[in-house]
Image (cartoon, helix red, strand yellow):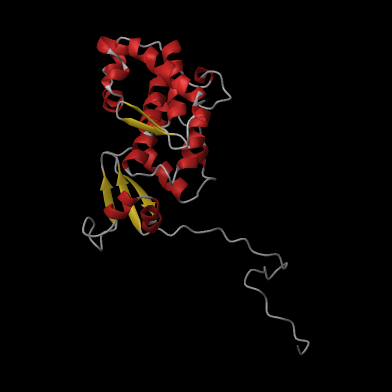
Length: 242
């Protein structure tokens, strides 16, 4: 007003007048100690509580002491948990988040998502992971992207998360291209804990797998004929369209 120069803005560079770009800083107030190697993953507890009711209960009294700043999770997969924490923190430019995931890693992520009820919070992240693994409607066969021996892990991940369309595609490719014996697959402790025994049929028979893949293909073609709330059930999984 009196011809005096205005004070510099806090975002102005005092040298050349260009604005200073300040990188956002993630505020962390807790550390998860994950896996047998005790990897330390700093987290913002409020974001975890907002994303998952399981985390909300786990990171609050009486389950957690008020002054406790470290939470041990010894049986969890550290890489899967780190991936989930980074995506919940919107750290999408992180190299660890953007690298290609193997089917085994996708299954570990799916198991953690299922355990902590994060399907809604990470819906679009899961969509991306399954597309990355070849489970989209524009790719004729998943084996163009994924090793044949790894198809069973994608089947298990899709089954665990009730992703009907992805599961039907993986089951069909598993039927056509599986190179390991189904008896060996049944003896895989991790796979056997997720997929029901009826998935493999009696004594490793593929008869039920034939029927299963065919059934899901028919349902996939018939999605448009059912109302949005139509529910289809197989084994312990529950699939909903719409």
